[in-house]
Length: 212
Ligand code: CTP
Image (tube, rainbow, N blue to C red; front, side):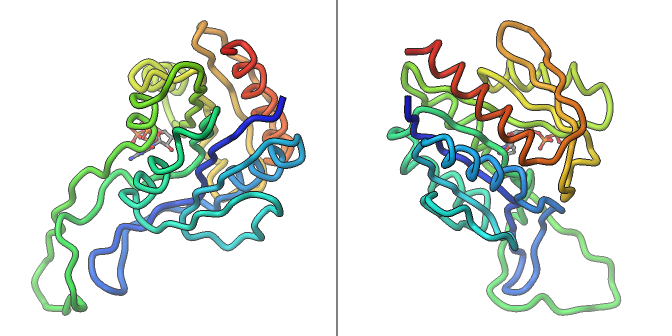
């Protein structure tokens, strides 16, 4: 059955002045691989992505965004019309509290940046979901990984969470473990992100079938 799959990918950028921002090393590869695989499987794909340097997968509807707030707005606009969310984006957790309209000037004194938390896109979309919608989150943990990923699944009320090794960031391959709501862990060994994407889209299909 063809599904409508909303996929987020890449980093977000949180600007502090017209030319400077906070961000992270995410390349967008995992999300783009998911989108490519989902299109190949015959699904309808919307890909909401932060600034990346990747060839977009043919056949996906692309929605470029910059900040976490923009990603939330873009996702909210279309979430209702989708069956599955694959939240692979590395959303920045903090943004400068004040965005300056002109370039911040250098001085000899130390500078304190006041940051505020960004909206949690995954938690918001999960809380707003309608019956039958499947929500899959991602986590990147460097210690106490399984326990922390399990905590996120619970807190954000996810159907599954994909736990990445820290070496996954900006890399072409990764090793992942997937936790589903029933408490079961599945390990998928070190592989190219395109191979991992196949497994994750397969999981989304199975979870969506259970929900019908
Ligand atoms: N996420 C999100 N919005 C945010 C932050 C994260 O939607 N503002 C999503 C990510 O896309 C990912 C999952 O939430 O699917 C990761 O959970 P999170 O608790 O934010 O993990 P980390 O950012 O790794 O946070 P922590 O520093 O607590 O490990």
